[in-house]
Structure formats: C-alpha cells, structure tokens
Amino acid sequence: MSKTIAINAGSSSLKWQLYQMPEEIVVAKGLIERIGLPDSVSTVSFEGDKHVSHKDIHNHTEAVSILMNDLEDLQIIKEFSEITGTGHRVVAGGELFNGSVLITDEIAKQIEDLSDLAPLHNPANAAGIHAFRALLPHATHVAVFDTAFHSTMPPVAFRYPVPNAYYDQYAVRKYGAHGTSHMYVSQKAADYLGKAPEDLKLITAHIGNGGSLTAIDGGKSVDTSMGFTPLAGVMMGTRTGELDASIIPYLMAKTGISDVAEVIDIFNKKSGLAGISDISSDMRDIIAAREAGDEKATLAFDMFVNRIQKYIGQYLAVLNGADALIFTAGIGENSGPVRQAIIDGLSWFGLDIDDSKNVVGADGIISTPDAKVKVLVIPTDEELVIARDVEKLKA
Image (tube, rainbow, N blue to C red; front, top):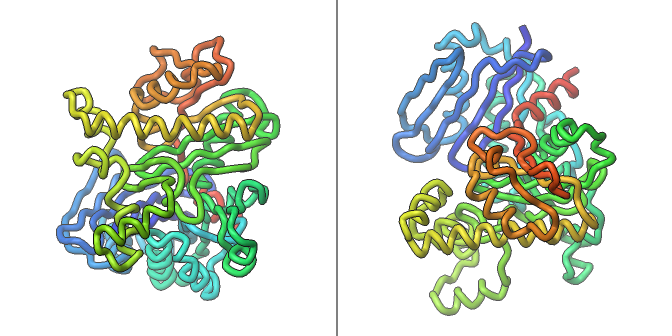
C-alpha cells in the first residue's frame, strides 16, 4: 500500500504527516522538537495514541533516522519501502521555482544556494531532503515551495524601489512565503462561499508564530506581506516585520555590534511579541498577561493587531474591495480575541463578526449575515497540499 510523507523542517524542528495515497488518509503524524539542543522531543501520534520520547538529537539527519525507525518500531510501516513519496516544504524558491518539482542533486543544491533568502529555513529544508533521499533512494522526492503561489505577483507588487541593477543582477525583490497555506485556504473559502476562485477577491491572513497576509484576485496572489525574506511584513512572534532599514547601522553604532548578521538575528529571533512583551512569543501568554493588566503585554497585543489591520487596509485598496477575509494558522484559527480586535478596527469597510461563531474550533463563515465583507476561519492543511503535489509528480 503506497504511502507519502509530508515534511516541514524548521531550524530546530521537523513536523511530518504520513498519508495513505491516493486516498488522502492520514496514517500518522508527529513532531520532533529541539533538534540540536539537549533533551530533544519526538512525538508520534496514530490511532488515537501519542508516543513521546526524549533523547539528544544533534541534527536533522539524526531526526529523520529516528522518525523512520519509530515508524517501524511502532508498526506503522513494516518496511521503509512502503513510503513511495516524500514531499518537502521549502520556504524560498527565489525566481527559479514557480511550482513543485522532482528533487535531483541539482535541485537540492539550488535549494541550498537559495538559503540567503530564508536563512532560518532553507538549510533545514535541504538537510531533511538529503536525509530522506539517502534512506529512501527509490521513493519520489518532491520540493514544494512557499514562494511558488506568489510567483503570479506583478512587478508593481514584487519590485522594490531600488536601482534596477540590484534586481537585474541580484534578484532583489519580494518573494513572500506561506504560499501553500494561502492557496489552500483561498480554495476552501471559495467552497464555503459557493463561488469559483476565479470570481473572488480574497484577503488571507496566515497568523501564527510567523505571519503573512496575501491579496488574492481570481485565485492568484497579487501581493503579499512577507518580502525578500520572511522577516518583512507584519509583526510576528519573534520577528519585527517591517521597519526602517536605517535602524540597522544606527543600532550597530550605538551598541557596538560589529556584525550585521547579529542584528538580523535579533530582528528574527528576539523581537516581535517576545521583544515588546518581555514575556513570551506565544499569543496565549500575551493575552493572559494583558488580562492581568501587564502594560508591555497590552502594548505587544495592540501593536500586533495594528500591523495586521494596516495590511488588510492596504489589500482592500490593492483589490479595490474584497469578498472575504480568511483567518488561518495557529493564532488565526484559535484566538477569538485577536480576530475580534482586528475586525473591531475595520467596521467602516463592512467587516463584522458574529460573537456566537467567533469561538475556539471555528471553521467557516463567522461574520454576521449582513457583513459586506465575509469573515472566515479555515484551518490550513499545508501537509495535504504537499502530499497531493507528490502524487501529481510521481512517475
């Protein structure tokens, strides 16, 4: 029986989901956390049970080996050859890739070479690819790019107002991210609204620890908030989102930091909700502290909402109006207070939420019947998109 595994490798994590294909049945799923750190954690969930183990996992190659051995030890598979396809989320495809591709040695090398565009992600994506190709030499291996969905953006959206030579010679432009998520929820939204994707103008808000918004016209991305790298756009869990580039040399002069990479690392890993609240990058912690009267947590929450509202306003202008706004990802799917705060500041545009529908576990339309712009919550399923692309490219 053919199985495909969808892989999402982060800098210190490896999330996976095993499917029976083409039936699209989830056989098992899991997450390996704290890769490269002491006391790594591997979780495998299947048939209603959860198996958790703690061990030191030094790199992604070890993580993949442990994952595959767990699948055998737990009798989820009898042998490795049952897995006939692997699909790998790759954050940055640059201008090289506008769709999913079969992975060859050359493709794997190109993914590594694009690491400048996603320094926290592409190296981990490539490590996962190498490990699975070594363990499953006869399987079909496919790279699914976060940036591919955004390849339809026009130059007016993806170009930066810098000298042409920087684009012509170095491809300095907006690439975006979370493309598989934005594509998936936009297609599901069309189902909920009873219209073809080609007939809709949508704004999708993928809001988790990382966050991005996308303007979608007729099923195609026409603008998105993340930029040259995933650092740009809205405020996130540990990332700044947009700020004035002049802050970089200013901070280096004031603090004595001599390596620009250190500043970028701070902007990526120590900023956002975590940097403003001084508490956590987790929105649940921020809300709890805000409700207890913590001023920094309150400011972090308000800034987070404010940045998202601004992008929604931009994209209402880009699209000249929208049929619906869709919330997805960890915060977007689960935080009623965040959704409510965002919509409360956009009532002039005809957005409104039905309080009885804005609850944990919401799935579908949560706006009031007379809302001019519908509001939806749609759980994303990037792993299913990845598995489907593997099936399309299998020999």
